[in-house]
Length: 197
Image (cartoon, rainbow, N blue to C red; front, side):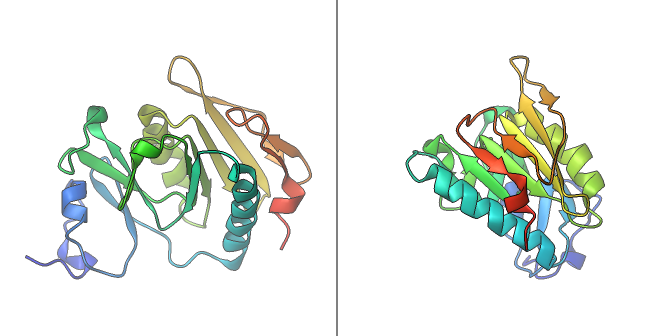
């Protein structure tokens, strides 16, 4: 059966990446542990401006490195217990920006496995999803650094994975502060350059 609309799916049911590949509709969504989460409609101009500014800074930083950066829409598939079969993958996310240094994780569909850095710029209505569900799956999958950007308050929350596989939060960074990545020590960002329009 061809799935052309989101209404054809049972949102209370769990799905896999194999199911996700069969869906042909315009709405953007993510799977978290098999459950469907609708993505916000087209991001605001402010959201896009922040993503664009971060992309430019990160692209410039990565030019001489083997790492790759990607922006949404870009599927990041987080397999169960490190298995890579499409049937085993029940989490498919589209972070605003992700950086992958292990190029073997990349394929034509996106990334299989945890990126090194994930950046999510919050939109109205998705804050609870980002903080509750995505935080957990990013931590469990081994994302080394996770940045959550709050456009309305012009601040960043930064979480770094420790030796025990748990995120540790840094002191929040606000507009005017300088952000220094823990995993990319030379990546230093003046946040006034991020929150400019």
